[in-house]
Length: 418
Ligand SMILES: NC(=O)c1ccc[n+]([C@@H]2O[C@H](COP(=O)([O-])OP(=O)(O)OC[C@H]3O[C@@H](n4cnc5c(N)ncnc54)[C@H](O)[C@@H]3O)[C@@H](O)[C@H]2O)c1
Image 1 (cartoon, helix red, strand yellow):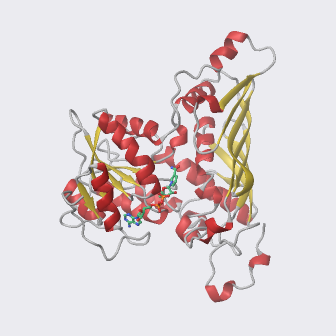
Image 2 (cartoon, helix red, strand yellow):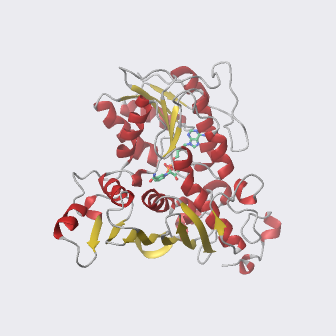
Image 3 (cartoon, protein in one colour):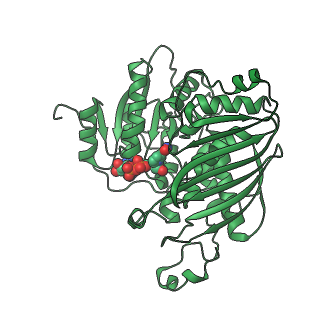
């Protein structure tokens, strides 16, 4: 451990969602990306907690073994932890200061694995330093933040782009079903169910940052159901309108702990969406009934081919059913599966999947779900823009849902609409 160079300095302040990151002399703004031809992608991990260490590190390490990447640095505010992390995993440079790492290491790719309120400013700082970004979900707390990030992308120069970790979209199962639906092989999609019915106990919500708009960004619609809703949209295409309800039935939280929604898609399909942290029998589920077959995915935190089923309509020729059920070689959904595509997009200088409009769509659905639930209205895609309170806050300032000053909050819980 002692022979690992540690480049960090303990920082006294980090950017927050309200601070616009600004360039420094060592951190030139909008540095153009450097060509990746004939060399490895230089990657850095920011935030070495559960997901940084448990999913980003192994995915980047696997691609390093394949000659695609090298992990050049790790950043965390916990100096001892980052020092240990670098020593254990042979990472040459550890930092406690993101800007300094960006200036000194000039990575091509930055994995952002920090708590959600940091994502916006850390992503912008990395883009301005010329690095592509792979940022954990939820991408940013609001649509306004998302648009601020997108404005920093190098759309004229073939990058850098910022993409969001939506690993459930990747792997052989979702690829096969997306193609079947896109090519209308199963006929028109008609009705769908999308369920994230999980269970989180009181101890889970005893952690102070959980269940709060400011620090968690939202309740189960934002923090837990985002993966399944994103996959539903990836499979079915653009949504057009949503009607929703939200409740706070069990936990002492600011956000909701359950929501239900009805979603209409541009292709005419209708879907029900349930996001819950109150469900003892936990499951993540997507079911899509098309004219010629029902496709169903049942899993919890990730899927492989065995988690999908295809039930053909009566009278379907055996050969068709066999082809629909042939998912090919099993590639489970995973960070690695998404990272492979991201690195390929970097090398091609192309916008990666799960970035830009494609990455924004599920965040917009969540904002619309909250707006519909809290205002008791139908919300259409595209209507939440600058000037709309739900553009800058997922709670939209709604009475009974928006955070209230501590002295005024006592005794309001029974007045909350459910
Ligand atoms: N894709 C998935 O399936 C999945 C699963 C779990 C978590 N996540 C997401 O990953 C993100 C991180 O979650 P986690 O469970 O790993 O959290 P965590 O608390 O385990 O790790 C966060 C790390 O960030 C570090 N950190 C905090 N502030 C920092 C700063 N300013 N600069 C650098 N490092 C800083 C912390 O010290 C910690 O090591 C969240 O957005 C979460 O929603 C995604």
